[in-house]
Image 1 (cartoon, rainbow, N blue to C red):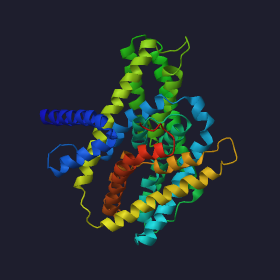
Image 2 (tube, helix red, strand yellow):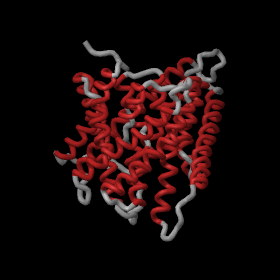
Image 3 (cartoon, rainbow, N blue to C red):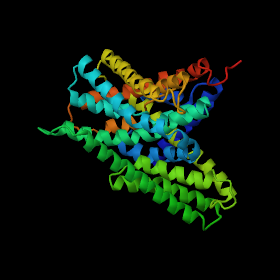
Image 4 (cartoon, rainbow, N blue to C red):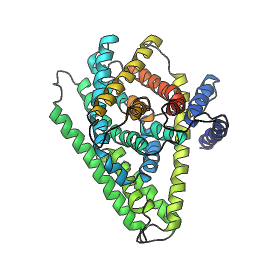
Length: 404
């Protein structure tokens, strides 16, 4: 136990120094963490930490999702609900299919394995996307569109992932029909949202009985983790459950400035500060461990050339998901300017969620090793290259002020 605590504290100390240095040299914090993690692995410094599916889902995702949802105004999200939902559903399906066909044709992967990889890597990751926007300072409608999509599409991708993996492992089974897929997605996603709303309402009812800011904050923590674990227990979307609980508590509590608010003024301020701190800690560990794990992944079975092809296919798949779907809204009140579409495309980062799904693949699945390596390669490119070039791109597009 002492060794675990010592190593955990050591990683936190490293993250603190990376944050200070990154801010001084104007390097994105997440990029600095991944680079530092790679350096630790290459220097053979034992961190004792292992990146696993359970660690990402049960510990890392709930605070990051809850903190992001807590600060989203429902009125703003409702205004752009249609394009967000279209991107989060059809966008995932289109991107996955483009990538699956591309991998099957260009790399001669079995279509079942290619489709598994396409689904697990298709969704933009809320962890990476939200961290990127905090660092670049983008606000307004475009930030809402990208964050809203990333918070919702991973729930869709997780359901499709489970269905595709089951199909890929089946022998002689028939491909699931679109109607069955739609029912499964609706049940899992809708059930997760209902669980989140119930947990959020229960948390608001409890917090309304106290004016102690510490108790109020503890209630939000129970809501964040409780909604995730409860939904997951019933095989529903834990991600969407936590997002729903965060949206509800945020709009009825943290963002509610009326006198009848169930949260006290001090409680609202403390809740926001607490979850910002929790998100900082979670981000610090996940991106450090991504760097450590990426550096230790052997390219056995997947060469550098194949990895480059996969990265290009991922970018092409994202382009097919963004530009045609945005064209559907070109002559409506939901029209997205071309600069915003470029942001949606290049800002569709992949991160912890894709890695969690890849690590959850059954050992007997065909080409499992290649899929895991490809997922880590795409995530490394996404965080290091896309994350590092995001600020210059935003300035070039005129979405953030230029530095003088």
